[in-house]
Image (cartoon, each protein chain N blue to C red):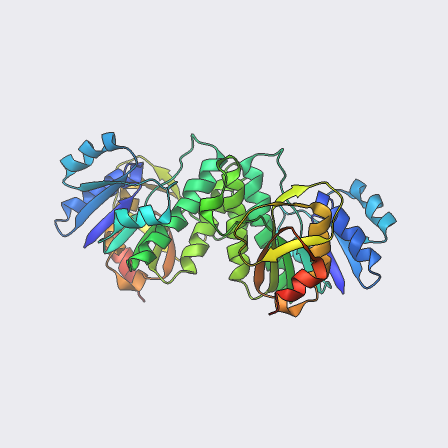
Length: 217
Length: 217
């Protein structure tokens, strides 16, 4: 597959780019904001393209044209204000969906946040972030795309364990290394039983392959 | 009609409450955040109910139960941060829609902002506000409600002129007194040809009745 990663320079985006290249099965385009970010991705064996989530849908569509799948791994991050939460995590995500639709790219994987569908579980301190994630998810669900929404629990920089718990609505929260989130995305990309579904995912006791396969039952 | 006005204590909300009471045709419930805001509305001849847009959908549904129509006139205003833009202008609006759906209230009028559907016309300085309005509108369009979205141009405190220009997508921006926006809402509430439509509205050369009727052609 030809895969465009929007937000490739983010923490999960970088790990994901490397993993997808390493499979030897995919051509990967790292969509990045600044030219100086390119070298690192070229060294991984990925192509790069400059794209700005605050630009137009048409511009974004040009950037991802030709891809078979788009992964939205961008996030405004904790150091910016809620203006960027609105502009990047919500509008940037939806503009990416619209850009994918524009050239008939059907497969779209969105990284969201655990419990984004359940307002009663949003912690007060990052409630605006959850609102943005909630509506990005709902807009994707209302689209015609073959989406998968991955909603990880608390993100860790620990090494991946390869062991997860995944389900459409998990009952208990948890955490997960970013590396495992990236691995889940690599795994679900071509799994048709994950199309038009969203999943909470945290560290657990099943291998990623086994856990994702069990979702098809 | 029995009409619940969410955000009655806002600038348009106050004018709207008085106008609806004055018609003599409607029972009006002013949904307000603080008990001390009640007296002014009781003096107008409206009922009051305490409702918090940061509460749950179930709580909001209890507050508006029994209404035939809901007007969402709330706004976080210019003096709060973009966290409130997300929590009130977007999530508060959508929670109000979900609350209306919960008790089968079909008629829903939302006050939005001119050109909220057109990203290329959003001024940089209040872009986050437009993002919130844009997605509140899109969520309403995706709902099953008999909605009308009113998207006024720049809001003025001038006395109403009763003369407007209205259309699904006007080509040029403009301004409009808040009193005229309130009058447009009074007028469209029972006009079925405005159901499931959104309109830009600014000051113009037609009477409100004439302008709104011309939309049915």
